[in-house]
Length: 163
Picture 1 (spheres, rainbow, N blue to C red):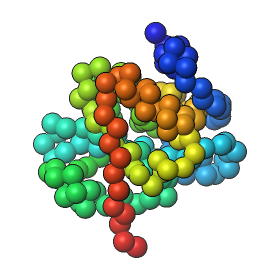
Picture 2: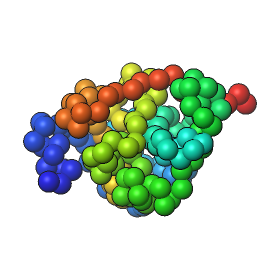
Picture 3: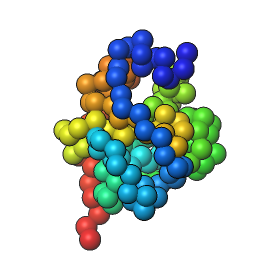
Picture 4: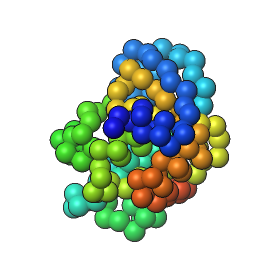
């Protein structure tokens, strides 16, 4: 079943946009794309031992304090996971990370964290594993999708580096 047909079967509506490939938030900034919903930054993280992996969805301009987040979540030092780990755990390339990639993780080896600060707003931008597309999903539809996958919704206050 495709991701598109899965969302349809769950009665999840979304706005779909096509655009040139976007590998990071700065590329979207340069193109000044006009899309509804909230832009997101999606980080693929791992703990110090490489045993636990996380997708963190936050605001594109937030400079995440990984040391503080590690302490907050009671984990050994968090860092960015490699492209090889991204391929192994979510079956995607860098620049394509979003919560929708969890469809490729039926063993639930990757934990999803969403920043409370962006959850309160409009729909969230998600790449459907293709960085030439953006789908905007409402928070209640994301809840429905996560429930279908049997995944918890973990909202947290993401610490920011002081400037």
